[in-house]
Length: 375
Image 1 (cartoon, one colour):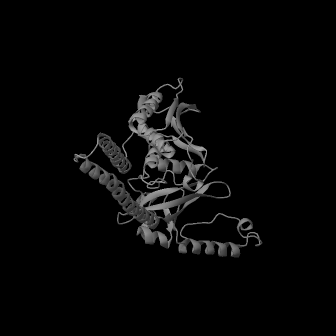
Image 2 (cartoon, helix red, strand yellow):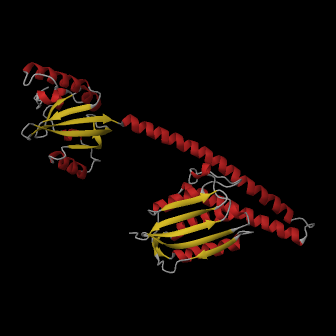
Image 3 (tube, rainbow, N blue to C red):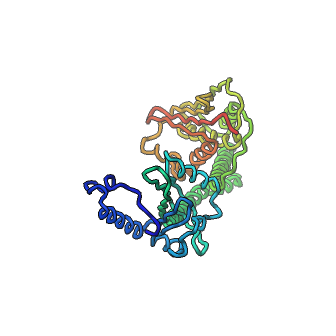
């Protein structure tokens, strides 16, 4: 290896060999050098001043520089403009620290022709028996193909989700539209009694609300809005949601509140958390099908404000628990399966989480936890 010396002791690196055997040391050095040159990993060796002293064949294949071109160059020839100075600062701090002596991370490196390729790199400081630095070995793995594969998988998943979304949209819009069209035709009939007309009007209202809810959920899922954090009152929000729910949903069950008076206003996106509360309360109401009770409560827990929705409905089957927050997954006969997916995304964007407790036949509890210390 050009200008490269292996600072080792035969006792440590070749168990059972004769101490200080020049022949064995030479054989070991040759074996290591052959492994260096033939490795599929991109490798090079620098002297203590950071000048490249040797490269392997994979280096030439990936970066384009030959042995003669790379010799004496600084590794800055590989540096991408997109890599921040902070990364190199941390790298050298770790390499020069005798208690660490290595750095590992992913970098974008530049090839001879100007392309940039992602590489996972491990750089190790080489020291002699006295602890002095004699050089640095860089070992890199090209992960461009891995990134490309991930992108293709992501695109494939996105297309599959788009197809699933289209099917759900068609189903969830066609059904209420059909009901609205039929109801509108019946309204023009002179044969309708006042009771029939009231029933048709209720169908129009319910199906219009359902259609609007479907479109709202699709827009919220496909185009998430940035958070607008403002000091807001979670108690007032919960009370509003319950009041509107009682007036908006036909055959609503009993809904009560238990709001913590000690909960002071804090910063959160009021509109988006209102949507979270509405979706979860509506799920609870629909699960009861007009029978039972829902309780909406608030409080504080370990630096988080919570909004808890309890119902005494049929509960959630264990098999359905793991899909609760996945889009387009629903156990209801109708619905997009987006309500909880949107709620989970909004709460996570706040730095919070949603906890679920449920037992078949014993009801369900959803607890929305929001950090009270927001920016």
